Image (cartoon, rainbow, N blue to C red):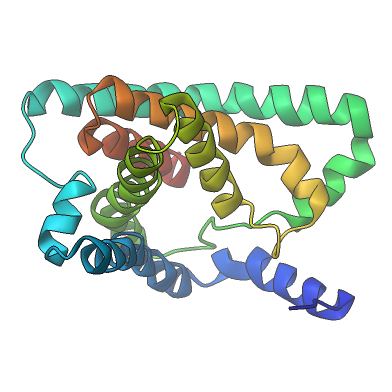
Length: 226
């Protein structure tokens, strides 16, 4: 599919404006459940198992040491939140600015996808927080960690599956067809680092979704409310 300059600009502006309508943001957030349903459906057809069993294989199963994993998830979520600020400073303000200059950073920020809800009501904030806990954290982690890492690691070394998962996680947050190259270059290191940390957390706890899902949700909630 060939994108004209006008269409590319239109798609970019659509992405930038997502945060202006909190209800639209809520609707798009709910759609993230497809991160679980679509891979589970495909996997069930390929392996000839039930969708329920396919979802279990993605990591939605009974966990031992639930208290420890929950505390670890909350702790790492808070850690990632404070670390995230330093990652932005390092990759955007130091690395990218020193190579490409300040004008490049301005262009990158103008093209970035803004999902911060503009003047949300109290009910909308509650909806978004609940969705972070029930959908965003679990569903993104189930796909990028529980599905991708586990299945790719069956074919190649674990470290490569982690790197591939982290790259795809990064491109989901800065999609090449929706944001300019300057945005991808500026924020690639930030999102890749977060994806890598979440992947390592997943692997460290024996492929459990609990710690990385909670860390992911906690990180997003802090960004939302702080």
